[in-house]
Picture (cartoon, rainbow, N blue to C red):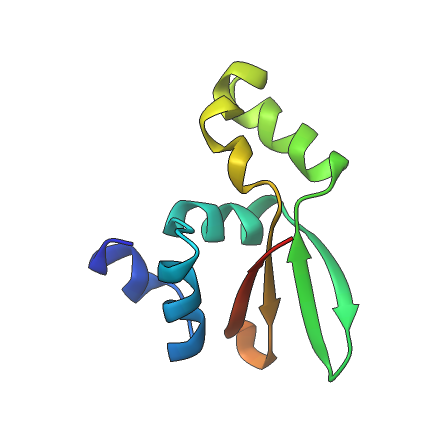
Length: 93
């Protein structure tokens, strides 16, 4: 992730290292917050993920299936978000 993009994201050190280890670009994290579905998770946190509805909405904005073809490999990415929208960790399911 570029240093400029990382500074704009509210990542814990653990989330930053997980993003790097799992090759998750900052843009995908931004897309999770913009388009992702939200689901309560144990411990008072929230899980952000791409479901069919969020992918459909993303495709509308990005120009259809062709517009999302380059990022499809990250559609299985999830973010666990704590209080104040702090990203605790990133997961590839």
